[in-house]
Length: 310
View 1 (spheres, rainbow, N blue to C red):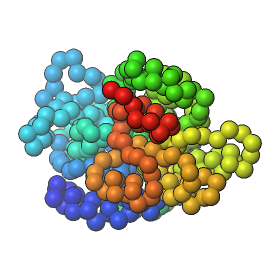
View 2 (cartoon, rainbow, N blue to C red; view 1 turned 180 degrees about the vertical axis):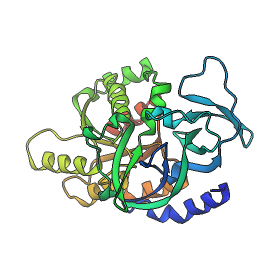
View 3 (cartoon, one colour; view 1 turned 135 degrees about the horizontal axis):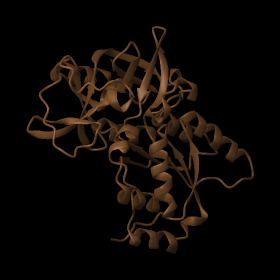
View 4 (tube, one colour; view 1 turned 120 degrees about the vertical axis):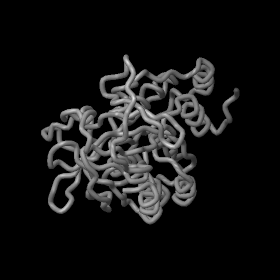
């Protein structure tokens, strides 16, 4: 699919965002198994170009290439998910993607098509399927299993350095006694959840965990109906199975016992439409993944109502 055709397609699919539906770009990695990525994360689909590989590159990197004047790394997605490498396969395709404010390419065996999925049709994969943490959700497309790649897991396997926040932010968290309050972390990626929990742990903040929006909403409603201490902030991914971050935020704002909760949306998706939808659904803030210092600062501000000092 050419760059212009894909961008036109993405433009046509933007109306799905905010309605608990997502457009998935389908591809294969070496057999009949279908895999998918959110079409908003894909810039272009190309035939595999000549790649430059330097000594010392990570084993999952097939090399790099020049994309519109910018050198971007190319990850062999087949190798990352346990398939035979595609680095030497001339018929392979390249997905040019943007995650968390950075661009990279992924080698795939072939590009299939774009399909629409309802949020409720996506579910967490069973461990018996054997995908491990490399897949964040599964669904059925025309009766065939489709697995959504957890790109954060793949990227972390290449560069998984733990995120550290500044001593200044840690001091401010201690001075403002945020360690007496709880944050609900909602994300379908196990890697993303662990990163956030580790970051908030450096601030002394206790976390409750949910793997998708529906699980988070159910837990919030149980907390609101009981005597247990509620959370001060919901920190949620956007793209999730069952109930996405936009739908979760709408549900929180529509529930009398929850509507006062602070909601921070945190996603690897980028683009102007995100900012617009953040306002439309009533979220308090949106931050693109993964910016540890900015995330910690924003959490502190939303939990205390005070602006962090520099």
